[in-house]
Length: 160
Image 1 (cartoon, one colour):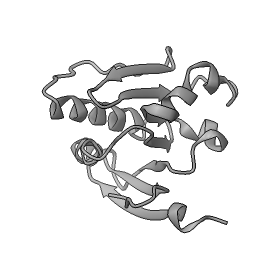
Image 2 (tube, one colour):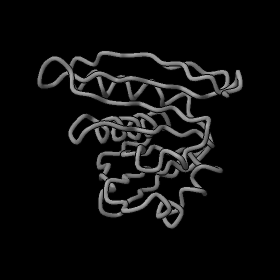
Image 3 (tube, helix red, strand yellow):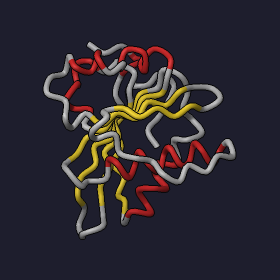
Image 4 (cartoon, helix red, strand yellow):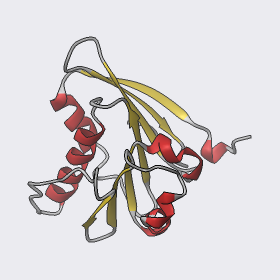
């Protein structure tokens, strides 16, 4: 049974177009700190990479750094970004064959002292810390619309 500190809070957010997804991701930039985990899930093309890139660019802008190129770590599995207060680990677990392989790419280090943004997080569901934010991205009513379902398991924080 969940303790009061980790009782999930769920919110559904309609995102009308890619710009709305980018703005939604940016709302997390000023709230993240060491140990935070954002677990992104959804079908191929649902917006996980757009969310991650937008978040990383927003974090850079907040400290005066223009991060033009944010590659998807589809082949490298993890990309690191150094910020003043933490290292952001951008994981793309699409090519992961087994959940235990996440340990080999440093997920334990990311969980302990960094900020983690994990695409295809459902592939390591049982390894995620209890205090993570899960964002399920789904296709919306038209070609560019998306629906974000945010499940927050973070003490003292609420979904956006």
